[in-house]
Image 1 (tube, one colour):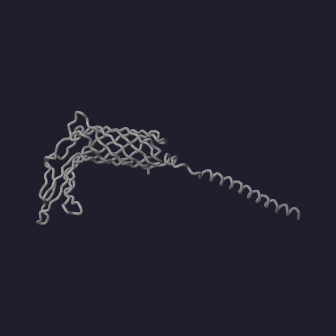
Image 2: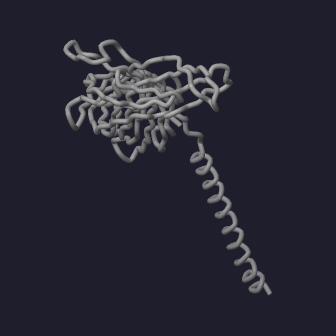
Length: 258
């Protein structure tokens, strides 16, 4: 009888020891998990994970002393920049697009609307536009002072935009919105700086040099003396002129990491 009781107690002791061992292992694992889920500061997360950068900038060409063009005085434009950041590589890719008014005319016309003579105000503007792909190398990304180098390439050109506003009308009527467009491939390089304002916001400044791939830094624009307006307010360009673009530009703006 004593032998049977000892045979029964042995498995029970083994089971109790197993349960105690499992409980101790579970406690150790739970403590490890608590350490693993300690909240990581947002700044470290932004350095380790992918993020996207969006910036809005005011820019202007820097005219040279020996350039004869309508840009003898600064002309300001706007640019939107998008960058995709991946910590696996040293370069960030993205694109940049913008436009820059460079002159035009405002005039009053009398148009024939269903047999009725109606006055209207016509606004015609020559504008430069660009669309570039970007490659950027940013230094000191874990600091508030982030210099960067950039290479870009894409299209730069000019277009003519017309808008007719009927007198007394609640809305503007756009006629021949882009009667002229001319573009050219260009490329260049830039150096800039990002200054951190908060966890995700920055002030960005950049200086760039660009080069047209065909004909130097010359683009074709609609010649103001060759703009023709018919009785219905339709605008057409009958002549173009060559304009030498300054190769240098500067910009400043705000950027946010998403």
